[in-house]
Structure formats: structure tokens, C-alpha cells
Length: 319
Image (cartoon, rainbow, N blue to C red; front, side, top):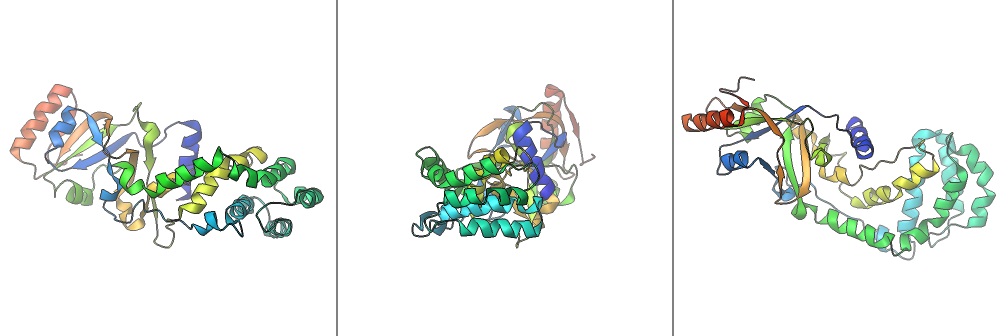
């Protein structure tokens, strides 16, 4: 899981795709099969139509946003910023930072600047090497104002709405890194009567929309988007005042749409994300493999299509 999170974060920043050269689409010969091939597109179905009915399901702890008395949203931002320090410093130092920050926070979620400045020297010794205490203090002090600003608040609530409505509005096209998988043939190519397209992802025009699926146990799966949104919000802050020492996890929001239970791990899935119901230009077809039970009519059509488009095709799943 951590490896894929790092891949997503790096891809976000560099936009350099280092995934599989070939990805595969297992399909039945249904009413859309030849139309999809002729028009060279991939269809993004609604997230709610995926195999797992719990996928892309978002929950939210509204108390973190609306409890005005304790101002939990601002407190939660401070807590998450401090939490990012944990892997980069000793547990003893981390506990001391927590204690300092807890003692200088007002009930309304704001920081007592004078108290924080008094702790500046002590905090600097506790922070990880390369972590600048001055911008750290400035960011912490400025969080309440930033969260209430007319620029930030609408962004947060727009993000909440988008994530909450994802099952209806998000489109997903599933591909597999598995070249020849018996279960995939059975479940997605109609028990071997269908076909499998081998796509060449080299120089594909929509690689910016392509991500690996992350497989987790039921205990690991997190659907509460509150923390995800806040971590996205504070991500750039963290990289700024740590001078890049600590990398922000920008994958927080998007991984909601990329996480599946590990019982689906055999699929080795990659996903194209976009608007539900949209059609994306497909990658270049390298080959098409026909299931061993494909009909003579479909074999003839694929053979003709392959010759016209100049790509390979194979009968009987010989890969």
C-alpha cells in the first residue's frame, strides 16, 4: 500500500508515468464491443456500478466542521500538522511538541501567538532537522484565518460535495496489469467467450488520469473524508515550512476512489478516472486475445478488424 501511495504522490508532482507498459481490458462480446473498438474509446461507468457496492463511499464527521464551540476543524488541522512530524522525530520529541501545542491553543481553535513565540527556541530543538520553526509558527497561527477566508472555505466545501457525490458523478474505467488470468477471463470475459485487449500505454494521452488501485483489509479501509480533506488542505503548508524535508501526501482525496478490499487483489487493477458517462480515446491496441469459447462469428469479425487496423490477434487465449 505504501509503495502505491508513494507512486501516486510522485506522479502528481512529476507527471512522469512509470506504470506497466501494457494494460489489459477483459470484455464480453456484448452490444458495445465492436462499436467501442471501431470508435477507439474507453467508457467511464459510474462508480456506483462497480463490483463492490461499498466502493467510493464517503462518510463525514460533521462535528469536525460545525462544532463552533470547540472549533474542531481548526484544532484538527493543527493536530494533523503535528502528526506529520511523528515519523521524522523521536517519540519523546513528538510528545513534547504535542504538549506545547496543546498548552497554547485557545478554546476557539486559535493560537496564543505570544506563548508560541516564547516556545520558539524549544520547538526548534524538537523539530526534525531542516524543519524551520519560524514559518511553522506562522502557518500554525494563521490556520484559523485561512480556514475562514473567502478563498479557502468555498474550496473545502466544494471538495466535500464532490467527494460525497462521487459514486454518482465519478466515472471509472478498469484495466488490469494481468496478461492472462483465469479468473479475469471467467468473470469479465463471459467465461472465455469474450476477448482481452492489450493496450500499449506508451505516450497515451490520458496517463494523467491513470492510477493504481490500492488493496487494503477491511480494518484498514477509511471512508471518512474529513481527515482526507484537511490533509490535502495542509499538504502544501507542510512542504513549505519543512523546505521539502517532509513530503505532503497529496494522494489523500484521490485514494478514496482507488481503494478496494484485498479480496479483489487478484485483479491487479489500474483505473482511469473522469466524469461518469464520458468516453476517453483508448490507448493504442497492441493485440487482441480471443477466449477459447469465442464464437466463429466473433473470431471472424476480430480477425478482419485486426487486419484493417494492423495489430495482432490470437485465438484461444494464447498469450
